[in-house]
Length: 233
Figure: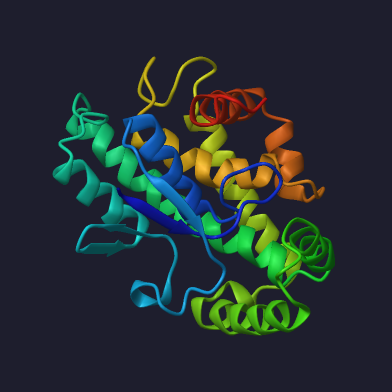
């Protein structure tokens, strides 16, 4: 059976990283059976990044590559009805979510206003994760942020960048239904992956305050959450 390897759950979502949660939601929405294995050490993953999937002799990493590979291999029709314009819009949203990812990650691992709260939440839900592992992960992320660019922002400037991304998302999500109509598609899984990791995040950051203040974002997030976690509220 197909196996998804991703980071551990946190705050009631199946993966505390937006990319892994995106793939999880896509698999659920597309109706693909799979096993979900949670790991913290990504050193053995393709390009040392999570998530990745293993299906027989195939190992595939990178969330967008995974979605394209799954769609082709299993002949999935989740996006079959999209127009060329909608596919272009999806690409733009996906790239914007890549930008939002860095702000969300920075707010957890680098922003000292919230780091200790995130650290303590991880330790509560996953006691096997040691202080030594978390300190190493924090240092590793600080290096990533510096070379990516977000690490050269001060915390308020980094947060402002994320709020700008969320403002664009708020303008794109409709009051009812999903991004492209009454049926959820892959882009809804992508949005859920990142928004759920803000909305269900039990720490009051400006990112969460923005999401909570926008009924359309909350409704969309909760709708996908219910669809991919039918036994959870």
